[in-house]
Image 1 (cartoon, rainbow, N blue to C red):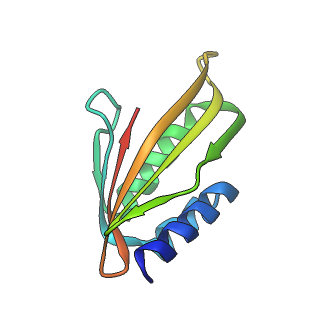
Image 2: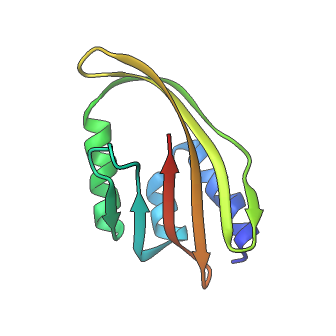
Length: 117
């Protein structure tokens, strides 16, 4: 797949919430995920670690009120998009989160994702 094809598929799958398909179809098995330093899990490597990061986040969510995934911008082997969500966490705090997501593609797979929020 080209970087543009990966970007199109990534947006499609994120908009339907099918993150397992994102992992299976688009990510390299040794993918690196980088979050801001203040995050509970600032770095994770490999699909199992990404799944665990997602599981931990989902365990803290009481209710999902909505969210979005923007169209993607492609430059060379990088994809950028924005995502956001409106959630109530199990601690009762409702928050709206917005982030910039940057993905690096190599040999037809996403090898790195980095989030800024």
